[in-house]
Length: 377
Ligand code: XIL
Image 1 (tube, rainbow, N blue to C red):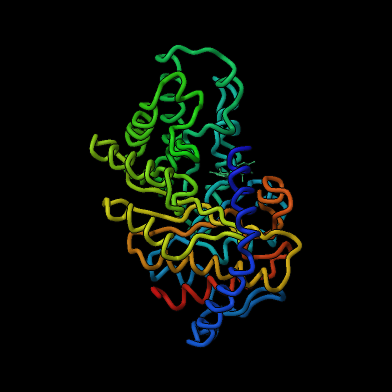
Image 2: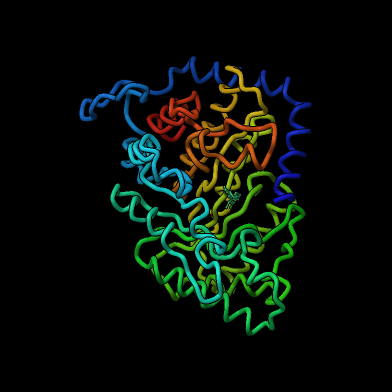
């Protein structure tokens, strides 16, 4: 938790200094977008009219479908139960989802001999009922690993066995139902070194190869992704991950794609050029790429100007993805400010998603809809 958090706070600090300049930039970008008259907001006559409080006009999924783009959101299982507005908005706007926590070790494999598939199953059922693709998240990470794994001293063969059993069982359980798996998540730290974890300590760097190979055996049709943050910011980490992924390919490890998480802050967003060149870099290796966890935290309190800055960031990330044909998924980390990890992860920041806590669309939503309607900028 803390490293990700420190990194975001550090970015926020630098960003606050630059906020004046950025505001000007955002205003200019917006001015240009308005001046060129982007988007056609006319309602699709095929669609039934919106209910009170719902955005009129085409849905995100109606616009993304013809582009063969997965437009998705991370889903906490609690929200799907007992919040009808949540489920309605999710199914209306998105053609993909990622279980936010339900497929992580601590939920799905709480004890060595016990798997709990119920929460993830309910999310996958919802997805299938509403014709949505599922991104599986995640098989190997350093966080949300249960204490039965972390608080024991394992020999290397023992821990490999545990990891193999987990991957075979979880991937096998959802075989044929998962479009993309985040096989390994955040294996690199902010300096570009393979980060410390139980997997690194006991198995060593080879845990990554093994995880991909075992996932491929368990579901040969699922697209297997490496997923991480800050890959859009040029620097040691972005370089290290790029080199590592090339090496995986060279050694014949079955990797299909790279997910750029894109947890952004309005105070220091990546430029569209940076985003695009990161996506292009991986696409150039012959890999699929995707935006997998986009959110754009606002330094509270929110204002109309900050919502517009936020919309500009959403728009830039979407445009970067639309400009790269291998960018097949655009997933936000939630969709409503009612359920978002940002306020608890980064106190002082919030309102990071395209819908407010009452499911009213924010400028960010309108920007996404415009971007999808317009297509490749
Ligand atoms: C976050 C969830 O949103 C929180 O509910 C949970 O407490 C911690 O994990 N990178 C990832 C995601 O890959 O799995 C994280 O999700 C956010 C950062």
